[in-house]
Image 1 (cartoon, rainbow, N blue to C red):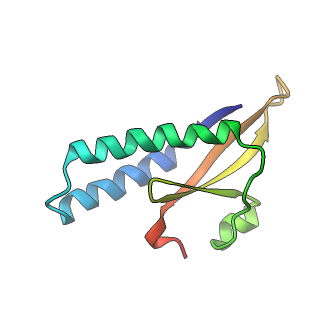
Image 2 (tube, helix red, strand yellow):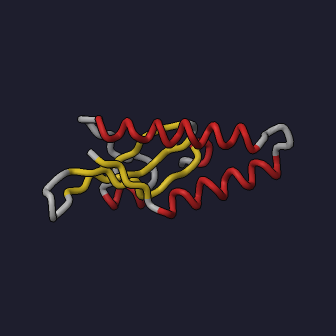
Length: 103
């Protein structure tokens, strides 16, 4: 199963780490790059999952019927979709929030 990531997700992660680099002098760009690399690898696990945890805390995620996945300190909202042309399932990661802000 393919995993697609919405551009909004990349923007939110980028914005989060830009702010973190400004506010935490001990955090380096190399550390951030490694975290993002591990995050991208971790998200590929969604392509192999069978059971999907339904979102339970963010109301807009619940209303959309999205699922959630925790990876590298972030909570990702995603949905399992079916490609109309090929009839194959894929995972579409729609939103993200840092775990400390997930409420």
